[in-house]
Length: 239
Image (cartoon, rainbow, N blue to C red; front, top):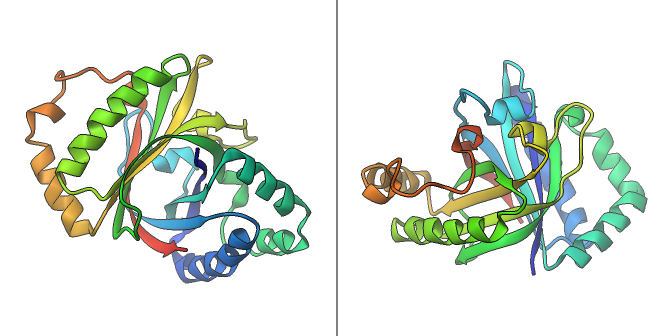
């Protein structure tokens, strides 16, 4: 079973080039230590929410852009082994010392892959979500996610991933649980939809919003939608 490490951070817009250089230099090191894929996405359409949103998740300040990133592993065991290597590799300290953003506000966690539908390729655009889900409702969430994945694929999505919160640590400043105001009996779902391009995504959403299957009340989701976080991101690295 595949495994994902998910990250969300706030990066000064003026530091975009520096951030791109930073992740391009760090990604080969992650690959060397066992990561199979590293993807970085720059915030493009990141709306304000009434209850939760991506900006609030990382306490983004004026002039900062939200970045949504992930690393893929073939298994949790491979991820744990890579993490141990990272903790002892002196090069990782150099990577941490050069971060062109406030690492204290970055949120990260490990996720079991609950659903992986579609083909693997380099996306042209990514729709990302964070969702608070009842810890006891894993199978109900899987069933709902499968229905939604089929709908997204029908409208042109190339890949749909949902990761079930497995190793979700508490943070001193920010964390995934606080991002979605998770309750004691909830965990976090970290997911995304890949599209061939932003144009393909925009055309698909224009059609999906008119689809009766997407209308409120058609089918009640197994989570509190008011605390769901979503946004659109443009890939800047896929290695």
